[in-house]
Length: 456
Image (cartoon, rainbow, N blue to C red; front, side, top):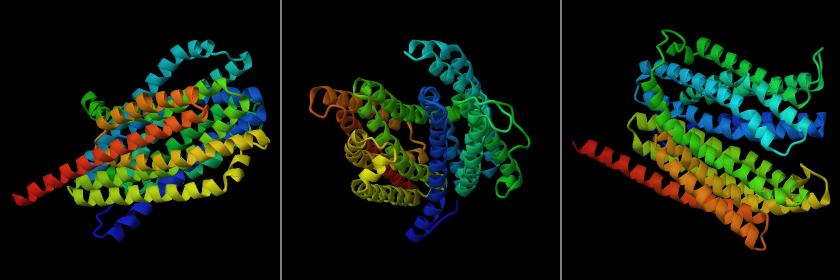
């Protein structure tokens, strides 16, 4: 990151930061996509087992990752304030916390995994695949959480292309490991869906090792001596990160878990309806990578400017990010409207499923538009280290407004399954508007602080 003077310079820098983040997020999404597709080639039970395992893991992972994301604004503020000497200490404490959280997840998982799977009405082979997929995956949780902390440090310096390179290296490695362990190549047994868990864990270890090597050897990261003069774990330092990270984590968890809830509620409909819903939601999730990436870039840029006590520049970045996200969402909406049939046929060729998927895609147009408005604002608020209000807004908009209204529309109107999508759209829209008002409040607060400082 560096100081910019004009809007043109800001747009250029913001593009340099956000494009690698977008490529990184899409690549990480594709990693999960290929895990599922390749497991499906091994058999229907393997696909079902991996799907069940992923549905249990993803909300936990995204929630914990939200806690780790707090390192980004913390370090961005320090760099903006030119307090570079404090950065290694914060990063080391972040790695300690990441390790502790990983161990906690593994211990809790070991205690509750069997009861959860036994409570589900699963075929024995599906339960077996889901269980050992998650056990295999758990061997890579510690390096995964450490890597995500290191990635936040890399991104906070504005070096988002480095994160992109690491993930682009890991994607073909993950495909190779999937090929070896799912189908039994190079002398290894064919583990089926369980093999994708082994492959993913190995990938987590490799990306962690690569990130450590880059931070130790490559400028500007090596200048921070992040792995020298280790400090002792300090609960007070952990609490600083947790105060920011826990609200972020819960806000993300509320958002991701609602889609799992909707999928469960839609299980009463025909198989074709569920398949069409999943297809449309899968593609909408891919499009969500765009506003999510804009939000992550805004966290970096605004955190840097607020740390440097330049609130007017932070406000300018907010305007650039939010308007850019909305423009892209409008473009995506036009593409979805005209290419709905092509998108639907990517997932299935059954005419009934294709037709239903196209109907869900029309709702996805409005869904991704609401998301494109809200996700960048969330990122901007994280840049200000304002996360508690975001948590409340996320809970109310998704679980108090979105899900109940969706359930009512699905069960008491002619919308039926589409009612759940309308409910989510309503929740997202209400949340985005509330987040926008909160952003205006913060911008006015910092502008008044700047005026008062100038007057004295």
